[in-house]
Image (cartoon, rainbow, N blue to C red; front, side, top):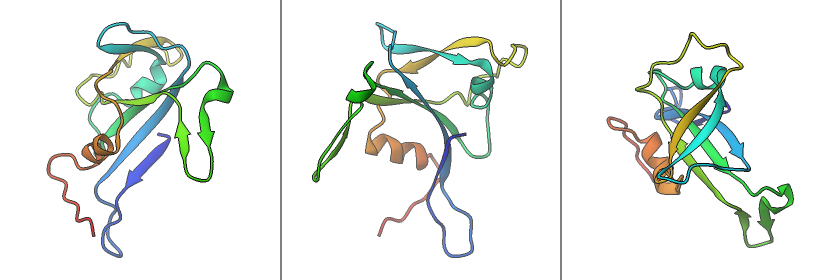
Length: 133
């Protein structure tokens, strides 16, 4: 996993709720329909597929082809160009029979745009409680 996003519990307790994410960037996205068809190494997919105690998600960042166009920054704003989408493979059986460097195409729904509200929704899955001061 690339990142763990955690909400700190009371002092001396676990961080709850929390999620783990794997982040991938993609310069030449394909998928003309309702989803992206992202080519991913089987070993990376196997780290996401199936149920885990801490939920795991893929964050797919679609970026411009030119690396110099990724961001725009000034004193008022840091703007990241293009968009980020999320996917969960908790209900998918991992393809253990595939060699780790085999490529598999995974479906990432275009409607799963990662917004602030969507990120909170991933962290605050059903049953999780969060008190925001």
